[in-house]
Amino acid sequence: EGIQTVDMQLVRLSTDGIIPIAQTIPSTWLGLNVQLSGVPEGDDYFILLLDSAGGDMYSLSPRFSITSSGTAAPSALASPVATATATGSPNPTQGFFATFAASS
Image (cartoon, rainbow, N blue to C red; front, side, top):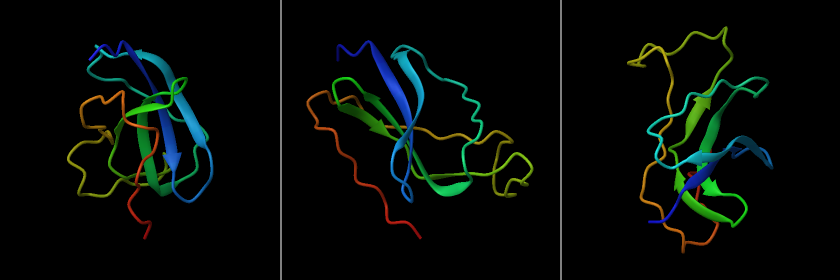
């Protein structure tokens, strides 16, 4: 599709603004480990993969929670490491917008 790099941003429904996570991630990478520091707990987070300079959004993760490191993880987790996956093929002609699920 001609996409060489993407930027990763963390978005929360209950607050304004974004938290930049990483810029110019090579699109050939199959994964990226991220350690968050100082991010408030919440159950309404999303990850966006986009071209922040051009405004093209490529992918949006499902909604997920962030808890403090002292909080026990729910027993339903299959892995001790929480993950969020952004899916969908790149679409550089799509405008920059996203429809988020309603918060509970």
